[in-house]
Length: 316
Ligand SMILES: Nc1ncnc2c1ncn2[C@@H]1O[C@H](COP(=O)(O)OP(=O)(O)OP(=O)(O)O)[C@@H](O)[C@H]1O
Ligand SMILES: [Mg+2]
Image 1 (cartoon, rainbow, N blue to C red):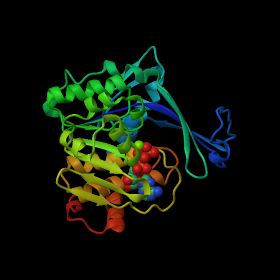
Image 2 (image 1 turned 30 degrees about the vertical axis):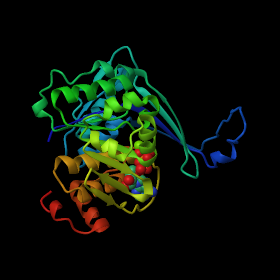
Image 3 (image 1 turned 90 degrees about the vertical axis):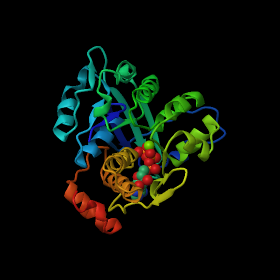
Image 4 (image 1 turned 135 degrees about the vertical axis):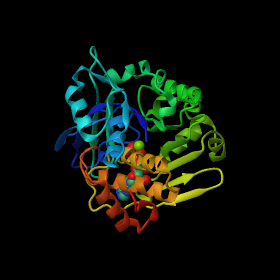
């Protein structure tokens, strides 16, 4: 199966604050000046593109990552290749640095984050033209340079390439008209429950309006599971019980890795959604977005343990 993942590439700095942000951010104050003494700091390779591609590779796919990185990308590229990600469509721009993402998580799992784009702003220079559209089963358009995201959506529509529009965090940067451009004709729209409300308020669409434009709406709801919704069907999937919760960063991306695997393998939505849920749970159990590991056999065994048997998975 040929899957192309587009999305940001970043170096992440993940920190833990051993307190509660809410005790420091006071409603009604018109000034904000806070500094958090953090306890732990992990540097890790991240970005939405690699995060999703990583879970796909764990699940036995060989995704192509199409993204923009900087001059410092060499080690990261070698590492991704070693994980089974094809980086031939990823461009390292010699005059840029790879994006950085910094996030502080407090004891309530609240997060404060910052993102510096760097080379990511060059993603709009990449293109699907020149690739053989017939050789592409599915593309995911994940948070990235906003102009790049909209360009990829337009190209996929024009070239007849099936795509998932996954605006996530980048919804903050897209206005209603742009969100409409991105989701029009998408095979699927993936959002969490908060982002679904943002999509609705920005575009003025209700569920039915969204489902007139995309075939499948996938909504994740953190510990409350996820739903796969079309015009005539709705499948709710539970979470896979975590053994421990280490860090929620990247769970949404890992979920998408499982979801895409189920879609390209043609599994029923009940299974596809659970693949997403379990891929997410593995990520939740480690600090960082690509520090979890499993073989396909281990994954299938834990799937059965979490959800019971699924005949679809017998030959996987
Ligand atoms: N506490 C949890 N326990 C079990 N599974 C979880 C938990 N939190 C998230 N998940 C799984 O991950 C999926 C995606 O989570 P969520 O809806 O929080 O994504 P998100 O908001 O996009 O996350 P992020 O953007 O921080 O990666 C959920 O549908 C669920 O399957
Ligand atoms: Mg998310």
